[in-house]
Length: 319
Image (cartoon, rainbow, N blue to C red; front, top):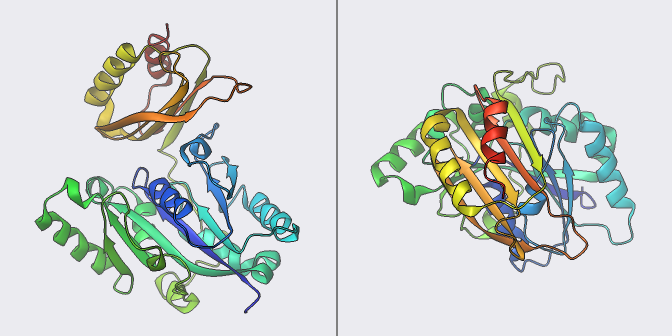
């Protein structure tokens, strides 16, 4: 057991703040060599561009479900990493916000390679205090993410009233009486609260779902879809702001998550925007490299999304 590499599974519903917490981990001096595996839902992946420049190596899989179609890739990546001379000493797996964590946990126990190399340290779930109320009852994944958590980061508490935070924590306690709960803004908390804590207990997981090691027990919410847009060209910031504002006013309740990397106003730095329902945030990102093609990439995840409407709306923002 002493030779096994500890691994943290970072989960949480769409837009809760998983990448924010991951960036905090990667930018803090902790002396660990961390390998990061990022899983996305959709045909294009941009989360690796949302993660800050770091010495850690980022592996991205965008097949949609880290626990089914890409399990082979997960095992292959872990095996290849361990065989390197500069092997990592800690593994972070950031799942898509639509992932049921139970089958992710399965990989650590039902696969011989994973079982021989890794020790599951903890399931860390980030919960969006502002928006979780919209997904309690409609998303079994959101409930499972909370139920299986060893640590719950109740994030964005500054966006709601203290009374509502108390109510949310009480409801979380009704779903998971054992997890340690941390209230945060921008996922700011000591790293020793989430890394190297040895909190995962297989017996506890089996008590939540006695069949969770059954690989056939996993189902997806097929009502949720992902629309990806990839276009060249310079984006006009004024047009984009108007379009996004009108979009969230009209479609906000159905848009669980949106994110994009844009060539805005032909600036030297890429522009990064993210959104959850009616909330939007945008800011300059990493500089474009000289040899790097400037390409706009956007992803929308939600229900009742109209692909032609989204494509035409974005194309109208190009100069």
